[in-house]
Image (cartoon, rainbow, N blue to C red):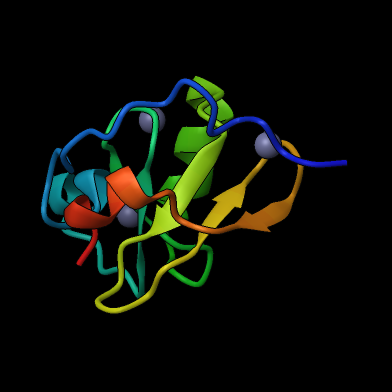
Length: 94
Ligand SMILES: [Zn+2]
Ligand SMILES: [Zn+2]
Ligand SMILES: [Zn+2]
């Protein structure tokens, strides 16, 4: 089985420079994830807030990419599968 959740997604600029929810509530994050559907920046599952996973669950946006400097991978929550980052999204990663 292969993931087709990247189909039709258009590159979109990150909406914040840190986890949106953590910035609002003064929480700390460990790593950041970028939603490839809407540009939401959320924190990883090692962070207290786990806001990237919460965002995927609440919005049904399927694919998050690592928003860590130099890291290039994406994750589909629906297929639970790691994906390569599509070229057009590269400029928006760190
Ligand atoms: Zn998928
Ligand atoms: Zn967070
Ligand atoms: Zn999203």
